[in-house]
Length: 134
Image (cartoon, rainbow, N blue to C red; front, side, top):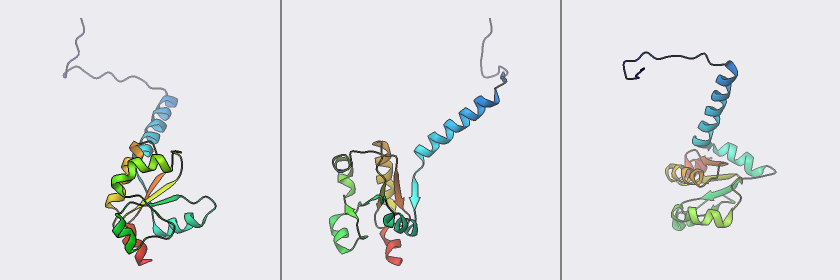
């Protein structure tokens, strides 16, 4: 009787090249769904001026939003994001761009939206502080 343990030799099977490509493509798709996308202020400006602009969501608190925000941004504070996103944007394929002051909260918000099934989510690199500099 053959018994496998840690010291058993590893048997390497010959794998068909097409299967290797299928596995590689599958891994790339899986990584793309896990990795978060970022967008620069310049890229955001271009996409907002385009024919199908993304939904721009400011996830800061109302006081922060009142002090200043990106033109056209909608306020949905991070603590309310999970509930409000389903109500306002039930289509999970809608392009969404998130921002906060520095990019920390928007990173968490993007991960949250990905977990909720929204896959066309981006975050602004550097947040509102970067937008003020431009």
